[in-house]
Each structure stands twice: as C-alpha cells, then as structure tokens.
Amino acid sequence: MSDIFLDIFAQLRAIMLEAAPGMAIAEDSAANLTLKTHWIEARTGQPAWFGWIAIKKSYVAYHIMPLYTLPALEAAVPVGLAKRRQGKTCFNVKKADGAVFAQLRELTALAAQMEPDLRAAIGA
Image (cartoon, rainbow, N blue to C red; front, side):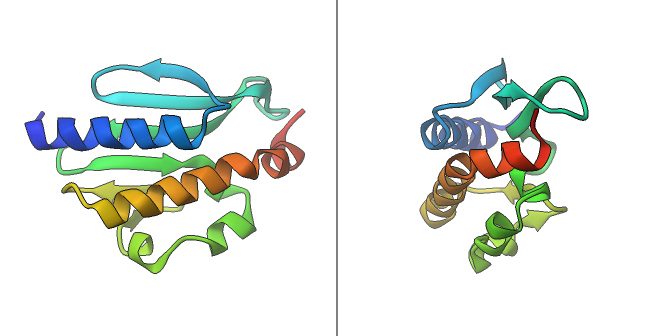
C-alpha cells in the first residue's frame, strides 16, 4: 500500500464523513471506510449502503451507492468526475486533486441530502 494512496484515502475519508454526517460507520480501518444508513433496507433487512472508500492496487475507490437508485443524483455527476468513473457508483482517484476532492464532497453532500428519496426508493 503506497503512502500516496494512504494520504488520498485519509483525505477522501474526511470528505465522506464531513459530507454525510448522518450516516452510520459500518467499518473504519486504515484502508476501508463503509457508511450505511440508520434505517433498514426492505429488500435485504439490513441498513442500506451509502458510501464506501477502499484502497485498491492502482487507485483509491470512492463509491456513492445512492447513484444506483437516484436518477437526480446521477444527473448531478460533474463531467470531471465522470472521467474517473468505473461502473455506476465508483470514482477512482490516483493522485491528490483539489478539484476532484471538491466535486466528490459536493456530490456526497447532495446524496446525503437526498437520503429521504433513497429511503422512499429502497427503504422500509
């Protein structure tokens, strides 16, 4: 695990925790942060996934899980982040970039504000 990725992870961890203060920490280790909702998802009977950050081999993965469900959130993904996208919810970060961090903070905060919509879509 490179020191660069550890630093990026620490910065992204702070961003996610600050932007989504109402979420529950399900895992918090040196290489993984998982946030879930406080309410139970109807389909799984478990708290719904909100966000996840993990250090991978060649990047740090930053997942915003409500992107699976909320079209309005999907429409809010900035072009700069779309270039870093892998799949539907993941953005890869290979180097510290203030502009990317700001966009992730904004998108994460919007997802947290849209939690009632997420709950209506998949919740109890």
